[in-house]
Length: 341
Image 1 (cartoon, rainbow, N blue to C red):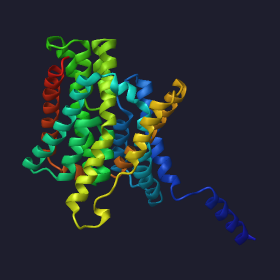
Image 2: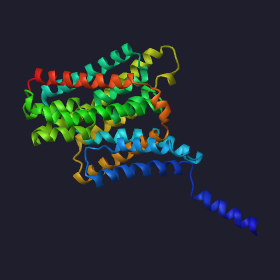
Image 3: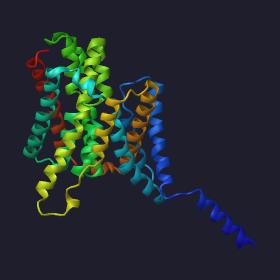
Image 4: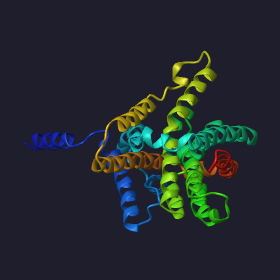
């Protein structure tokens, strides 16, 4: 009788358990807490992605995570992150990109490309690990934490390196967010030019919005569109990184140079959003879902990040992040002026 009851309880428990459940509940809980904090605080410039990785790091380095959570954490760190990147494509349309005009597109594209190359060259000269260099370059030149995690599918940096790169783009993007509105009055830029400059140079989308709208609605709209254009350029950048990695691998196995297929999903979402009129309510829901998926993935990455190993990366990558921030800020300003703003 007792044996039958025990077997029934085990069957009942197994029915409501899953290898992914514990880890997914943990990472999703962190992500939801980060999103709730942002809403409650009213600090819309504060990215839930950044909060999630910080909260994950704090928790993962204080408590010993149960072994039963490992599969769910790994699933969030890989599958959910990539799903979030795919849905990110629904935030922009080709029409928005084209509204920048040839000058605006040139300013954004050239600034992104030259910044990425410059940071890679500087990282090599400074002796920074190549994977970490690529992550800092992608995060600085494209779109902050989202670009870091997308580029890592090719760079294959360790969790500590991803966290370090995210920290770099958070620190210096925040400096730009606070500094740019203060110096806007002494720069030879009109409202549109200021907006394009912020969108072409500041790291995170939320940081761009916070800084650009300080210059008025025109500046805010121009900055947002310029930033979303950079987001779209994430797809060709990651694919280019993958092609370069395959060439560098030479005769190596295909596994040594992965193909980021999820980028094709991102492009498909951009095209879908451009071809169909998605209701504002649906856009709001997909926006929240995108933030949730990316935040859940970064929470998982934070849980896997060892602070001692993060500290062991040293100060050279931080110096590289500072160089990248200065370079994109100055070069981007020059490009905005050269293209007629």
